[in-house]
Length: 375
Ligand code: OSB
Ligand code: MG
Image 1 (cartoon, rainbow, N blue to C red):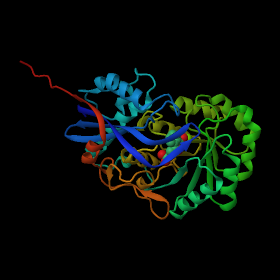
Image 2 (tube, protein in one colour; image 1 turned 180 degrees about the vertical axis):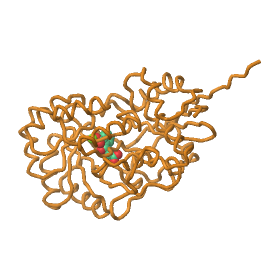
Image 3 (cartoon, rainbow, N blue to C red; image 1 turned 135 degrees about the horizontal axis):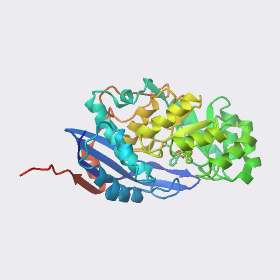
């Protein structure tokens, strides 16, 4: 796999509705897409940063910088035998997992096309269809949240996750639980609480939640273990888990009982699979998190979610929940059973709409390998 061209593009896309988490509100997305050309094939990856350093330390602009100034110059012209090799070549670049994942995942798309396999099969996936849940942003009132939940359940989604923060938690969860006593329900705090809030968080135990996701600080595995010892509901870590070492530390310490695997956060398909394999060995359920991705990132999430250990519904939902028009064709659709069926064509399995992407592009950078010609 000789890396002949790399194109980095920033596209602008507006979410159908604002999305509120404990760290802020987003509507206008600045998404980076990576296109790689190798041996006549084109692969696509998405850099899943948000615009501000409020989920993790990366941003759209730090990823632009790291990919442009370090990752692309290091990889252009290299001849890899597998996509997984990119990980070891990039080892010297510390952190910046989302920037690195964008390009590694594009290489996985190419490798799958070379082998004439859908990416999910190349990764070792065994699920023909994956279970889907939704992540619902913080709302003004419990009543408006209940109506939103009802709408998503009608569409077939198998699990509802509510974003919470101090002051917008117990009443909202109580209202939803009262209306829907049986559904799979979870909450995600995106690091909005502290260990001093343990008594308050313990009140969530009465709602029979599937999990509480990342209640405490984004980089603090140890304190989550102290909290898990004090509450009955399973904790799930998101922000804290950037690689297999951190996953092992979290499980050994008892900091969580479930892990949310996000492809970008862990640096791409190779590391995602390693975290998955480790959890599978320990019987720890995993699921696929989302970052308000365009279709490119969504397609990669679908491929990853077909691995055996992804036993819980992920935050992988239909394109139309977020976008008036997606950048892939067909767009991601969810069945009335609340599933997405894995595509059958080689690679990502969706056509990337390059004409649409050109129109949405605000800036781009391009690297081309110049073949050495001997005199
Ligand atoms: O914590 O899962 C999160 C979006 C931005 C940043 C963090 C998170 C999220 C989501 C989005 O919950 C879920 C989705 O993409 O559908
Ligand atoms: Mg989360």
